[in-house]
Length: 461
Image 1 (cartoon, rainbow, N blue to C red):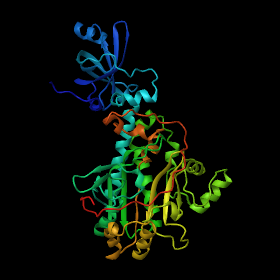
Image 2: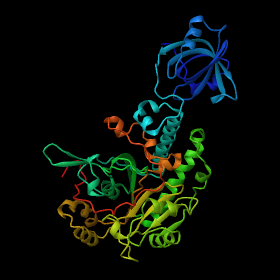
Image 3: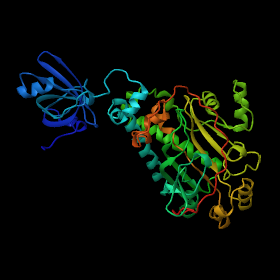
């Protein structure tokens, strides 16, 4: 095929004759002048055809164009400040590369369930393209943030016996004759071991939760970033989180203005995302929620409605710290000032997005960690490797930035599934579900202690 130019390459080529290819979005005609709006994944381009200036076969082809037909157009690039990208193409020829008959997603309004059932085609829409580009920017910003701060990327197992959260939220599979393996809930236990070797580390990869939920905040499969920093306490951990979120938001505002505009994202709330973020203890948060009419008692975890109500009181993310020990995982550091609580925090985003980050300082005292394992009635042998981290040169360490909903906050999408280009339901042909409308979600159950863990290597216990 002859050389061609992508749409994003055309602005500097005003006055030149080029070949470009793409898919038809819309067409219209006013007698002897035709207009085609093309997209090619890099941009959008209006093509103008004059019946007298193109071959008859090209004009006939124009008359038969339908939505998503793939075409090749030869023409002259013309500068036009009103056009997308600042240029349009005056066609000299047009030919069809791939016809498209009865494309199911027309410009009319479609329901969410219908769009999810046709997600492999919905990806082509302006909105989905904009979401994908913002998500790409966020992911790249995450990697750049840690690279610039000399963190080392550690790839943790996807099939694993190490379990960091609730036992009932696991996808299990038989691992040959070695026992049961699980799709990883978290890489945290592994990066704790790596932090003792490399100081500042992070993992960033797929994570799975077997939670059959229809709330807009839940996914069964998502990507999560989890740093771990030697010598960081809970206070330093919260500072790192502030820097992390601010960096990502600033990056998206600087580089994805067009996509945010396409998503009709009000950027004013994002422009307010600057450190320092407000901080409030769990105890004070419960008291505040009660004055706001919330139904919560000390000792309960904050549910979606409570998080939304609290976050509404601030113009930027708020950090709630030192939750009750009973509702948090066994590995969190006991708060010496109040042993009922642990040194942890959740970051809650405004506008109804709820928790976007969760983190904690780890229990670095061997005896206290062992006592907590015994109190949770966990098998000590299974956690011997994890105890070894405290036995051989224990150290203060903290982190775990769970950025699963940060993407939605930046994009202002109403549902986490909107940001997954091809979710699990598409891959395995399960019937997809629509995202419900309510901002709140039911209170989360207490976070139960994890069942037996496996040692760091990729072998399965």
